[in-house]
Image 1 (cartoon, rainbow, N blue to C red):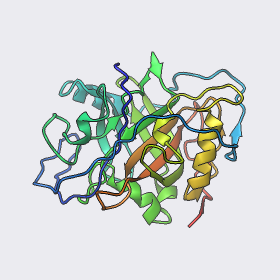
Image 2: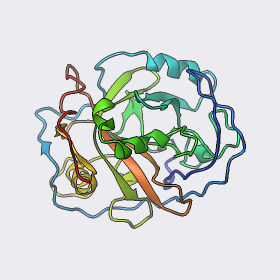
Image 3: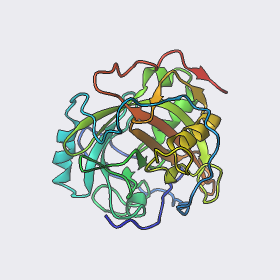
Amino acid sequence: MDKKKKTIIAVSAAAAAFAITAGVIFLNKPKEPVVEVTPEVTEATTLPATAPVTEAETEPVTTYEPFSNGLCLKAQEYHGYNSDTVGWIRISGTVIDYPITQTGDNDYYIDKDFYGNPDPAGWVFMDYRCGIRSDYFTDNTLLYGHNMASGVMFSDLKNYERYADFYERNPIVEVSSLTTDYQYKIFAFMPCNGVHGSDFEFWNYIFFSREKEPEWTLREYLSKIDAKSLITTNVDLREDDKYLALSTCYGGDTTDPTRFVVLARMVRPGEDPYEGTTGSVRRY
């Protein structure tokens, strides 16, 4: 994959109407234009870790196969319609139930639908630097989708902030590749500044060094999350876990660079997916 130093950031509200059905792509009415903020990829500075991380007893792994829910079969089907399809994402209690696309940059699906037609609602896509394949599985996987006024794409992510009980009712994110199904449990969510040079460039944490003090460590990443998260959960985190970040625009102002980010870690083999997701404490 051509790894250009670009990043993304999704957009804001627009008036739209979509018809949503299982396995059917949406038909659009005219919508207002959207404004994109695309920060540059840059390095972060190391901060002392405060988030709960435990040392792993085993070497980092590249794949987990904890369960099967058939999402990879849906991804395979839609790969036949669009070869940019690399997986599927679904969150219960939301409209998020989409094939995931990916290209060699983070621009294409900002303003195009699943079939590549112009559409300000864009589509759900994976950061071009990330992978969830058995031969290329990044430590952290970033997925992006617009926050549309019509409620499609990643708009429902804001419900984790809006409703006090939404997290404990919907703590699991289901993600598949073309061959394997995975579960992730959410452990944090927060608004973040999506501009180059901000204090937490969450989009730049793709691989985590296992060294003691370098930049881009998992401890640094979790420390910054801990400082900003709107919730404290009981989900434990380990050095060998795989992580997931879902990003959407925070509000309705098209000039606002704030992003709302939901963070999750992969459910381990044999683990109860809901363990640690109860008894959370809101920070606001």
